[in-house]
Length: 472
Ligand code: HEM
Image (cartoon, rainbow, N blue to C red; front, side, top):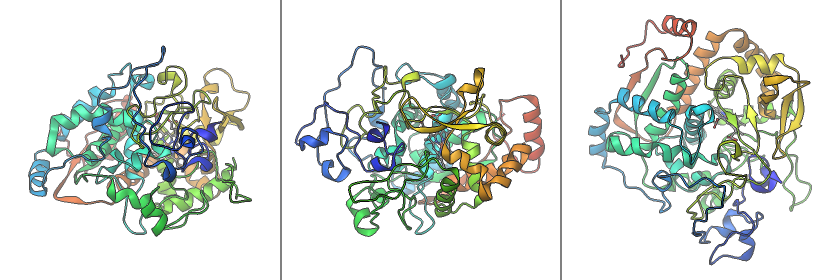
């Protein structure tokens, strides 16, 4: 069932437009109402349905359209104006505003544990993770995650909510703060707020006016002509991922090989095979094994996966849709959120930076199970109490195999080795690709404000020679 709704949970569905049965549409073949429709067949459909509020459903969040413009266009400043403006950007003030937004949970999209930080980390990662070394395309500079096609990738489900939360900050700082800068800074500042001793973040990513430069990343006719991929899960370079519409790999495991043209393969929950796909995909981003393990385990120190029921997330922003991903489970938000179809958290403190992801992944006994939405995921065997909330993806279990195993063991034993590796890999990830202003400049973070004294002292020691805080 999940497979019918979201490409994340099934590679077979990555090219599908997530259309819920029975919802209206105009000027469109009737089968575009069914989940079997592909982007190509339905890309001209007008999905501009009236917004219908069901009894128990949360209301649409404000600023959705400003964060994900349905017109597919947003003006940007002339280059000289941007160069002049970015020099004046008060990063400390932006971080302070971001910290307020992070902790101001909204009814339309309740924050897990009262903190939007993990959502912003995922936003920054998905904006940046399109970067591919083969031709230098992708990356967060350009801010094209706001537009089709990226905005509608199955991997980017519900990131429209994250951008909507940031619109007021974007408007406050105007030309000085590009969307590319805002999206990367929201994730970086969130991790800092949650205790990660991040070192540096640089401003100066030039925004694009449209998502045009991402058409080549697909799914689109440009991509199909230039770099076709006949077998989802096995796409070749220069495509950045093994599957169009995914930034990374299928979390449930790589797809089996289809046996006929009508079949697309099913995810195989085999960690060793997942590790091979991860090496390939992160290699295309320019990451080695240590950087890859640090990024995945460091990222999943935070937050949770969302797959409350089998009914899926609803339709994406494109084709035009006034209420994208409104969520087909219960209220559509909070505990009823459907994003990937997987469900649960990796650690017991998902709003605090630590290396428990690696400790739990290696030390606990895991067995294969499934999420409420029916996706493959791993649970703690014979769990009791809070341990029953923990889960791992097949792609997480991959970090306990092959070349990743020794690296994960080091990160599990030594927090500071993870701090250093994650800091360097995160900087590389969020600063690769795109067009930058000549006025680019870098902000040095002070030690993180949150976390226990031990963490604070550790961060201070580690960074005593190279931190020049701008914030008191
Ligand atoms: C093999 C690579 C990866 C895979 C397959 C993967 C997959 C996923 C999936 C399926 C979710 C759940 C989304 C949802 O249902 O809400 C998720 C959440 C998340 N991912 Fe990853 N991810 C990968 C790498 C990364 C990296 C490199 C980072 C950051 C450095 C990251 C940061 C996060 C965060 C913070 C969340 C939680 C979001 C929230 O709480 O709302 N992930 N990931």
